[in-house]
Image (cartoon, rainbow, N blue to C red; front, side, top):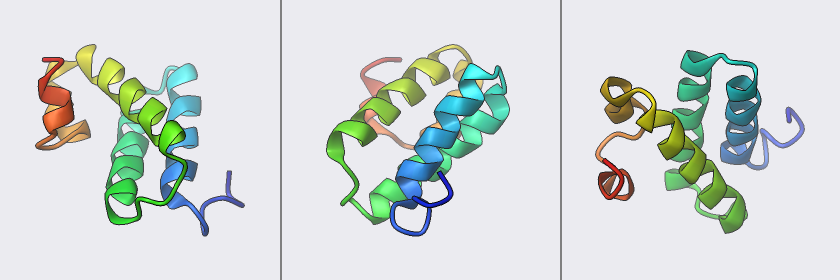
Length: 83
């Protein structure tokens, strides 16, 4: 993961978020999702399929905690279709 970070920081953060989520560390995963999605906004060149899976997982995670949802995915039109 750390080898990816200089080239694709959004991908590295997305992998980190998935790992943290599997470990039950939801708050840390939320921060990593935020980092991943913000990085993708600034650098749209990582693999689109990976970023789509990361966005879908972030939405599923946010559904489990609606008050934190807007923090994880601020002003997301993508999210609005699920809430």
